[in-house]
Amino acid sequence: MACFQGDGWFTWFLAVLLAAAVVGVARQREWLTPSGQGAAFLLGVWVFGLGGGRWSLPLLAFFASSSLLTRGRRPFHNQHGRNARQVLANGLVPAGALALCPWWPQGAWMVYTGALAVATADTWATEIGVQSQTWPWSLRLRRAVPPGTSGAVSLRGVLASLAGAGFLGLSAGILSPTNTGRVEMGLLVSLVGFLGAGLDSLMGAFLQGRLRCKACGAILEAGETHEHPEEQEVLFGLSWLTNNLVNFLTNLWGGLVAGGLWFLFHIL
Image (cartoon, rainbow, N blue to C red):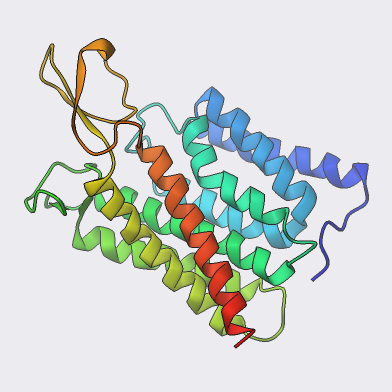
């Protein structure tokens, strides 16, 4: 699989136009905040300009499917649209994987799609799971908790996670840089995506920080803004481990595991 093919400035010109068009739609639908629009534009130009159509399609599949799931309402974890931190949490690992392509084309593809599979599975689980008629089950508290609580799962969310991982795995297999191993590649990406979403839930339940406002008693997640920032105390977990950082780490895990397993399969 050749990497970084294009016609110089014209390729980048098209990349700018495509990224601007995608961000324009997201802006109209209020899927992204202004900072999220800027981050998405830069990531889009990078992927569209360097990777071309093959690398762009899985990213567009993730973005389009995740955004359409929020149709008629805002993203659950951000009522004003996804911001730059949320965009980068899901986009930095795939963007970095693309840079590995000249030295390790197939492995870079697996890292790229593995990270996106985790992001897709987790996002689908969140956006579909919150629509469940019953409250999700907290893995840490072992009881039902309000929808959107980190570290909580529901049957609807788990099935959505499986579907999201399979959706990205299917695109990874169809767009595979090789003519052989497409099925294996798709299945591996799907499995990594599903397991990565599960890891995200476990980290959200047991490691992500929870804080309590001593002034008003509100329970907050790490990184959540509040009117009394100086009055917060840590209840459990790591005070610096936010939901965005959990997403980034699990996406990184998914990319490294997918790339590592693909490497092992081909040297054994």
